[in-house]
Image (tube, rainbow, N blue to C red; front, side, top):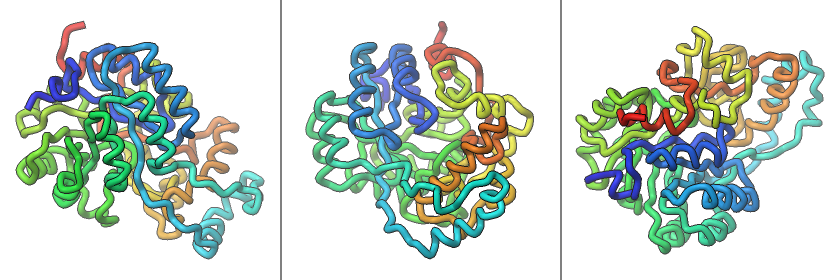
Length: 346
């Protein structure tokens, strides 16, 4: 199967949707370069989603991907939140933060009927999901206008589940990938394997096309993925230093340092495992803390610490999302980086 023809793009490269790290500018640049640009919507309200989609539609007539989380919102647990506040108490004291003053808030929302209403006005060609798939009813609404549905699998079992529940394409997310793990059938981190171990197993297990994600830094990585049965690749870390990226100056600086090679899967920033550069918060609180509230309820307390720390010029409490191959980070325009990943001439 030819991914480019299937999705209506020119190059077999998908820009990974990176919530909090990019907006429509990157989506537009990648799609106009011939790849599949992606817009992450997990942290956007329906109104803002509509504004971003209007911006994209005005700037490109190429296909693009709109991405959502589809986790089940947890019921707040006062006892667990109190335990989390106790774990963070020394840091609250250090920064003069009153725990009671930290606002409660999820920070990330799952795909909803309201979001589907907005999408129906724009009918994006591709809609992708993280943490499984939405309800059959919501999925049917997305497919009604002909959108192709993509979702991430981190195990063979997840890949089979996605195929049986309606995914048109599966993204095999290896453990090298930066940001949140797409795992949804298990919370056992020992099940998470590397891209080039996972990919051929998923290709053998399902009939739908498979995309490789995690550690892809160049055209050689794309060639290796294709040789193992993938129809294309998804890259995220490769775009973090592009001018279209919306990461903070502190995050940009961290990606350029030698210790960017030292990453870990950690739940201390959101309550769910995600790969980022090891900093003070990861070392001292995690990397994986049993005290962290369920995703995404850990976010608000850590956000308060992050704000105080960053105002003092430190990334000690910032989520510095990055994959295991920071050499993928290059300060190039996102369009040029897309063509470079595909091995296409400028």
